[in-house]
Length: 241
Image (tube, rainbow, N blue to C red; front, side, top):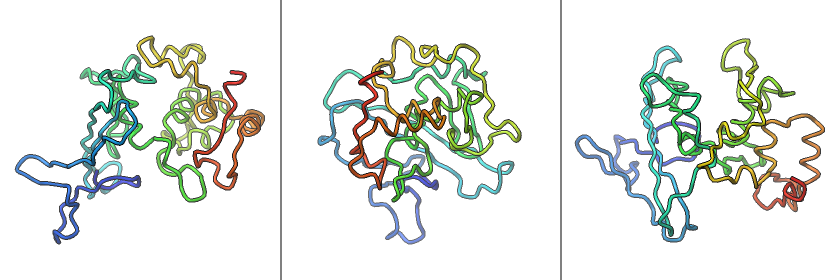
């Protein structure tokens, strides 16, 4: 990935070759990157993604659309794990059949059926700063729920964690059916974990009242409260939900 504010491997070819990433090889018409060994990873389905952007973008009107792509690969298991959500293109379908594309100037996000694999490259659950707050790409589950339930949120700009995408709209988005119809985004072919693994990150995307936030805080045991997203938290959501 070239540019951006998230953890990445820089494939830029520098004037001084000593500054180049030694894992990158440039050939005519291709750039090859040697990935680290994956033998020590937990068994599962993983995603390798790439985004190549023009660092000369001048404005939201004067730009060159970045190129993006991703591919899954298996570690320690033969069958690909189902997606948590897999229905983006059911509603967000573009005229060319590849899914609606949001944000051409910045990082060209196609909403194909497997869009979560692409978005989660940055909107993961590890992108936190030194104080434990989310920085840059917000977790995909919280932002997605928040955007689709925008008109019902108490604090839409804070919960979506993004400025107004269209001036004056203030994320006033109404889902075109009962918001509790989870299968609209999580089809029967998806993993099903959305229905069984209640957690404060996705739930806080819709339930953002002060009462709801306090409830989630009370139901979470954190031995290191100075870093509330360090990964050692114990959530008791599934005790009741």
